Length: 402
Image 1: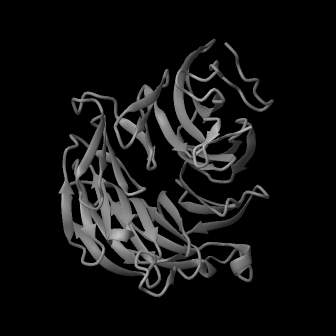
Image 2: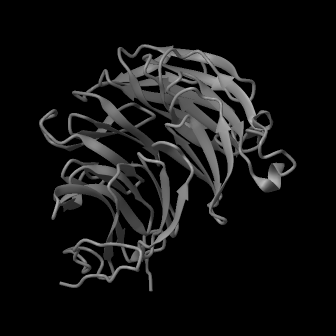
């Protein structure tokens, strides 16, 4: 058994660095200890991994070696959401009720936005996009006018901000909030758990059992989506089909018209909370506390596959998912599994983990943030690790990396 020697600022736990049966012989694995806190978000950006925790720290690691590259301190509480723009501008949201904007090249916080009165739970960056791209007969139309930040808070409101980017708005003061705040969106009556946005379109999902569609340019409420029977946890947009999907504690997924706000379909089959929802490559994936993951056709609302335990409610809760048009990665208590998303075949699995906090992958690597209990002189303790799996081949070109 061989072990990779870690850089000076990392700690590894024993891991077989050889390829596993069926893997490309160039596959390598590195596991890096990253502390004892919950990993709340993870961004895999080419050769960097950005991780936030339920404390005031943001850390940046090398996706090549696992080496710690940067530690970004400034928040006064747990960081719950992050978003990245052009590989250098990072936005984070935290329990200290603020949004922070970071310059990763310089490793400094450039702006602190304060308007919310409770934890900022969700945040996303929206970049200008041709909203008519799905219909080539229409003239291209780009929205929003400039990159924006959409944030959702436990104070039941959303905020819309101009993204501080030097080349676009360097003339604006870095300290005056009014230069950056565009709108505060009010109407929900309980915590906002998730937001999805594209162009000037924003959809928010709330614990008040409703979702709301907003125009981020005007700040107007467009539609209120009523039908769920309990708290909402997730929302995703499907602008190609002019619809959105919501899911939550009532174990259903609802499909809504962006044009009218009416409900097209109610998708059933999960036995408990649908806590994760992803749309990518014309596939909708839902994950539930019942231990199952389901893949749906978003255009027809038909169920394509069910992954996981054959008896819903008896398997481990699914804690993290990501997918593309080829594979699906699921993380649950005790294991991480990779599936062929089209055929349902189990490709590999990683055991020996406790809670799986986050998963992310691209055509070259898979990254898992997980919790593992170990024994020390002071008794049993739980630490958080990153596992970086380098497939040794770029799947986009099928060329072995050297």
